[in-house]
Amino acid sequence: MSELIVEVVRSGFVESVHGARVLAVDASGAPVMCHGETATLVSPRSSMKPLQALGMVRSGLPLEDELLALACASHAGEDFHVEGARKILAEAGLDESALGCPEALPQHAEARNRAIQAHVEPARIFMNCSGKHSAMLATCVVNGWPVETYLDPGHPLQRAIRATVEELTGERVAATGVDGCGAPLFFVSMVGVVRAFRSFTLADEGTPERRIADAMRAHPEWTSGTVRPEAALMRALPGLMVKAGAEAFDAFAFADGRAAAVKIEDGGDRARVPVTVAALRALGLDAPELDELATSPLLGGGRQVGEIRVRRP
Image (cartoon, rainbow, N blue to C red; front, side, top):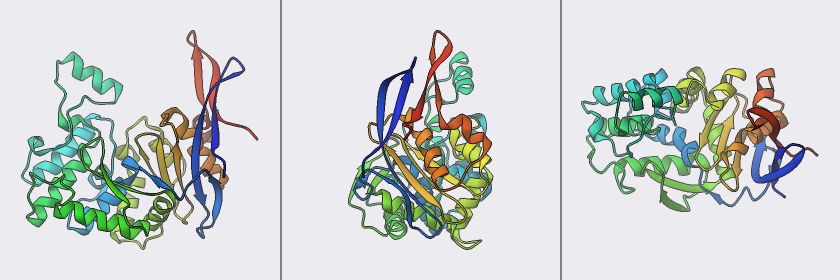
């Protein structure tokens, strides 16, 4: 099917457009909304973090609640994110020097400004994937696996994660790349991503899958940040589990199995949330808070002169 189109409208004129692939399924798993080539390979980026965390939990990672949510996070580098990652490392007998992710400053504007004003240098612990990397290291310690090579695709940790990805997506990993944080990145289809996300929210209470879904839904600010749209969506729709990925990918599942995956073809992140809201609404999931996320204001001279929106029929 054709792509879904997102319009950038300025002063009444369409200035730019983004094409989107979307697959949304109902509680039975039947497609409700389908745009673009959803069966072809895709790079889900950080939307795969719940699957990576599941591989870790199954391998003995002893995290619960906020820290388990942080293991699934693309966090904003707020103080509680940084302290949480340090706590995961400390409990494993490690410090941030063991992290293999790149150095960065916090993404959260206030935290970043404080760091700059205090002349704090970029550090691995601030990087948005440091929660996942800390959890990976902790999993290695639990199992007696080497920590120095934990990002190698052949490492026991990464083999366990790959097996989990293949199980939940129902697909063989077609290719392995390198994510922005340095961790192995597994290429699958959007169909597989939707299948995997449904398995989290449909799992029985107390299972590793359900523990991850429950942690993310109970602590949405730990998986993203206090002002991120992913947290706003989960707060607005109790029962929703959503995880964003770089290059404008989104995946979500609701408690009853309704689920979707979204990919903006050109990687334009400004189009991602409006399409995700459209997929939620196509599945009958809505709340007043979603009105502010369905479009993004476009400014001119400091005032709104347009919007970014899904093309109207």
